[in-house]
Length: 184
Ligand SMILES: C[S@@+](CC[C@H](N)C(=O)[O-])C[C@H]1O[C@@H](n2cnc3c(N)ncnc32)[C@H](O)[C@@H]1O
Image 1 (tube, helix red, strand yellow):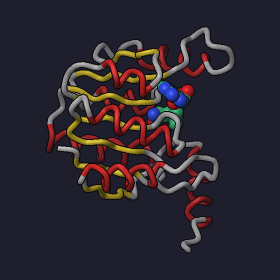
Image 2 (tube, protein in one colour):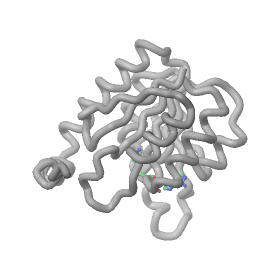
Image 3 (cartoon, helix red, strand yellow):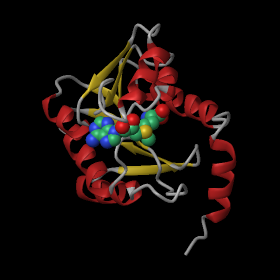
Image 4 (tube, protein in one colour):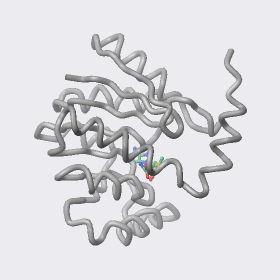
């Protein structure tokens, strides 16, 4: 059994600043786009729009998906902040929808889907299975190493998805452990 507490401490000491998350994410998504193309990315889970802002500089079209509209009680404030942060990024669209339901009605090829909404095992697996039918080159899955202690099990979903669909994944040490599935 690996003891992740050291990594958790490092993560918690740095997450407030985001200083190391943003550069590593930038490098990660840019590297993937250089290989598979940068026409379109779908980010599942918007929060405050930090990663969407990064993606705007890499991809031609960015769709960032949240289930919370601005008037949703409590959580809607996330989207208020994201709208403000992204208002000048003309290639970014905030889509208010459930991340799995949106995949089942989506038309058109997507270079990269970034799974970063509900991190529970069933939900991540549902996102992968649903968006796979759309035609996705690469899935990027956040929080493979559950170092924050309260997320679900994205890594199990990735392993099961890859086994069932004959796909390969690699782990990036970027941020809280990011899984990259070559889905081509
Ligand atoms: C971890 S945060 C996203 C962080 C963001 N991707 C970033 O890097 O800045 C998760 C977000 O997913 C949203 N969310 C949770 N469940 C969802 C679902 N079923 N469909 C769409 N969004 C969801 C939450 O409201 C929250 O804004």
